[in-house]
Length: 119
Image (cartoon, rainbow, N blue to C red; front, top):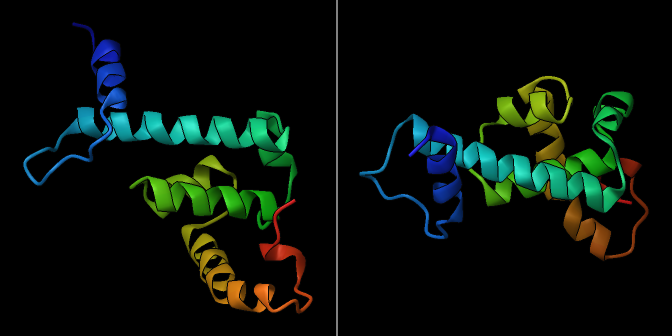
């Protein structure tokens, strides 16, 4: 079985790996899942890959996609920031923290800065 076939099979597994699962192949499977989420997010927002470079680092669509990646994968902030062209992991962490704090305000109907609002 080739490496690509192994990653494909791991991608189909719905249960997360346990403490005894580790290694490069498992990490590759996580990356495949994350790439799939990025592709789905780009399609949903009707963006092309080039739009990631052309939009602001704190674009609301990028922030929403980063939140989705954080909640559904174990990819590190460095990877997400680099993949979505969002600058440093520190800036991404700040954006995610800021948006997490703003959500209750958003529900109360107060007007927000455009950072945490998705299109």
